[in-house]
Amino acid sequence: MRKTVFMALALISLSLPVLAEDLGLVAAKPLYRDPVYNGAADPTLIWNPLAKQWWMYYTNRRATMTNLPGVTWVHGTPIGIAASSDGGAHWSYVGDAKFELPVEYGGTNVTCWAPDVTRASDGTWQMFLTIVPGVFLDWGHPRFIVQLTSTDMVHWRDPRKLALASDRVIDPSILHLPDGSWRLWYNNERAGKSINYADSTDLKTWVDKGLAFKSRGEGPKGFRWHNKFWVIIDEWKGLGVFRSDDMIHWDKQPTNLVAIPGMGEDDQVMGGHPDVVISGDRGFLFYFTHPGRRGSEARKDGYEQRRSSIQTVELHEQDGWLTCNRDEPTHIRLLPQ
Image (cartoon, rainbow, N blue to C red; front, side, top):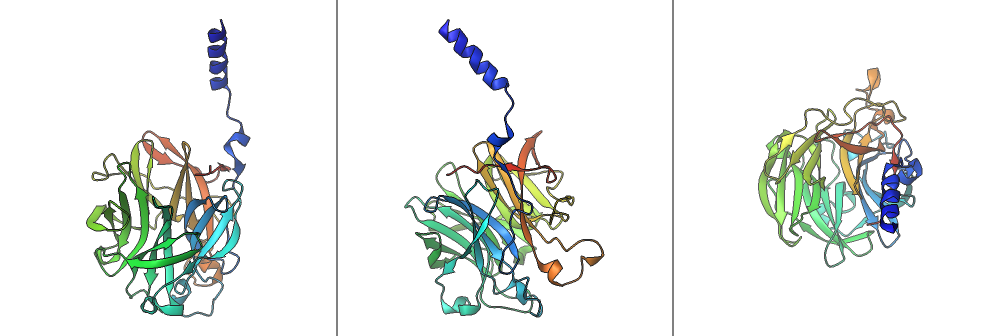
């Protein structure tokens, strides 16, 4: 009798709707604006067990410095840090990441782009960071990826330059694989903005493996969800999605994510350079927008076109592919990891 009652209660509980509060608070829209330069882009998120908060590292483009010539406003960029104490719904500015870098990396004029962060088995945090050794008027200069170590998630030391496919590589994305090894995806600008990858068994020695799949784009984000491997890339027409069972053979999703402008504040343009957080069985897409790049004003180069905002939306899997609705309220609850 007791067993029958227990099974009946279990069936009733399974049939009950999931309450909105169980899914978390509604995420702010925009999710985050940087208070210093208003140029937050290229977000990457990780749980900070020291602060018991979720942290977001981001490229802080200097949008407020409208007197800078050429593209110097996207050079000389620090890596900003924002924190969330409510599961990712609201974020506040913490400061800048602090780097110990050699003079040949640019000294006080170093450019830092597009970090990704993971935790190693020894308890340290490892950041993979794009470095441009200076502040330049144009795009025609070397850029490379370095790996740095931290014990407090603020100060980053011991930079090691990765030997990758060329002298113009950007946008690293790191993933810990089920067999214990690591994969790093990145953008090889010398090969037509291709997506390449490198592998490591110990998070120290890297072996470049060349082309990941045939596509042009940047800002790759690799992750594992629903027993599949996924890579999402910025194709400058929304976010392209690639799916694989073995990380060798990849299928491309027919439609891009956040390609059609949304209706929310700072979200009425396509989305760019993503991050994905898998929390429990839920997935959340984080991306940035240039809100002023729309309509007749899109091709101007003023403050409104340079500023950027971070947004988020929940991912869903439908018929084997990823979907999202950026105009629906996003209830978010990122769990401590």
